[in-house]
Image (cartoon, rainbow, N blue to C red; front, side):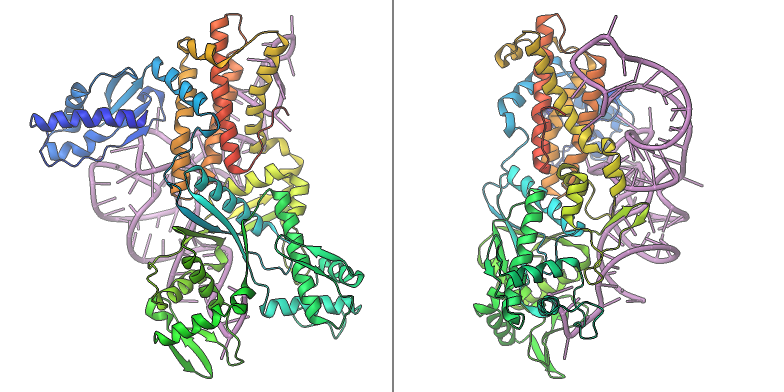
Length: 561
RNA sequence: GCGCCCGUAGCUCAAUGGAUAGAGCACUCGCCUUCUAAGCGAGCGGUUGCAGGUUCGACCCCUGCCGGGCGCGCCA
């Protein structure tokens, strides 16, 4: 509808250019907006405001000329000029019917588009290291990353969801030493407990499992405990597999799947880290200082140079990071998006600098990043502090069990990701009815309920019949609801374009609210057969949009509640 | 000190550069012999942190302050 109106305006402008009202070199960018106030019609354009100067006319006069030149359309009932020179469009009843027909025909594809044209996008998210179970921060990453993935799929992209994790390095040593200490019966109070050891209860569970000789399987590996407390290498492998398995359970409970699990260790094993270092040296961006090898990342906008190889000969984490992203580049994705916590934002400059220094033809701003800010968990009016080392822990699975998967996903994805998030666990749990996700799901269930009642009444509805009588939707509320449904595709497009999944949640809440209001004021199952069928058809369209939108959020659309 | 993010109603949050800044919670008051009251309606509540600037028009863009979070390691 928006596009249709823009086309009408475009035609009008062309004729105004021909008759000399507008200069021949006019380059209009036509914007059609949704109105907030229904007295402003259904859609509005500011075109006259932007062209008034070029036309040497005042905006209201120009608006009148544009309106006079607009071609006739079945979908537009009338136009009005308002305020400083807005052109307000009032859509016709016929356009309402046309839109509902479109939605029913598109069904679960309504709202999707093909902007991505089948191109490949890789989205990396969560990427938690296997040193403990997932917490709410990972949960936010999982919710945002997965919704973003769904949005990209809905807009025609071929999406690869990827999880990268560090299965080598110092913190894995700490993990292995902590488990080994537990295997030997030590406690954190013991003088010989490893420095920087992990104290959480899950370490004890892990140690017991290892000593029992359990076999653990995760999405990408499997390992059996050797029951030998002196086998540090075995403990290391077992611990990684065990915690990856735990994370798999967390993600499964959350309804998030990955296509690829990428191990940092594979970069070492396949010589990718060495090769990256060699290329950087060959390209002349490195130097030795104080026994370490440095990369001149300041050549690429970093505020200080970075150590690549430490005096002890080991590489800093950032080298495999660069090697990993080089690998992504070589895999030929059209677009790469990294979703990660804002506490790692400083890696962005570094990784991009390293990639530039490889002289591989990688664009400067590559790859894209979507950051999410911290999430604070509140319980009993106080912040729940999370610390792996201290052992105070609230896992993502705890949250899901307490609050429910749908509510947790919705809550974590429904807020703009670059704002801090307050997750009030008491509110989400004890007053779950206040949670917006139930409000939206209830709207969906209500539509289903109407159809159950229809069957009870031994009445029928079918799509073909319904589509014949849509002109019976004469109420203003029905027209406004339909226009809201018509906005859905543009919301999906925008959410994908600007990578803000929360826009879907906001839209769905508004739609649910409009529907609840309508439901309370107008009865659907009226005696008048045609009117009943028309309203049922509208209800089906609403159900489609609610279900499609909830699906993008990874939230279920229940038939009854 | 430097970098990134945030600052909107008592609280939690919305708002493609558009017209009178919106919801929920809380508080006050109404609506269930009628399709699920997990709902609806009405009221209360604002100098969008402050000051400039750009624009026909700014919560939104620019500059400078103030306040908060995060990051500034030869940890990841």
